[in-house]
Length: 150
Image (cartoon, rainbow, N blue to C red; front, side):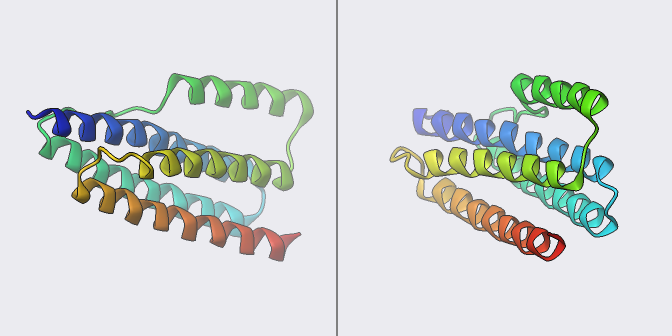
């Protein structure tokens, strides 16, 4: 495999890892909210992120590499901390939404960094740009719903 293919696969795997973190985060958020509208939205967003992950994984395979299948260790540790915090202090829909928004901001920053990578192939840059647009639209949907709830 060419060096540029290796770079593309490596970058995509980093995005896969973070996108899987997002899937897990949305599933946790859906379990944590008492608001039915939020639960439905978070479940839908988890599914959208799972589909996005599958697209990124397929592209990694096209480069002859193995795609990541799990999220990051850091995110797992963070969710364990949040579980403990929730047991001690309880949770509110506002706290769940704030955590979702924080996770989305982190994911978007990671995509911003990748979009600035001059060594990505044009094909991968387009895939990343499309994924970023989807994530941005999802974020706007969350913001609209949270404003309606607040």
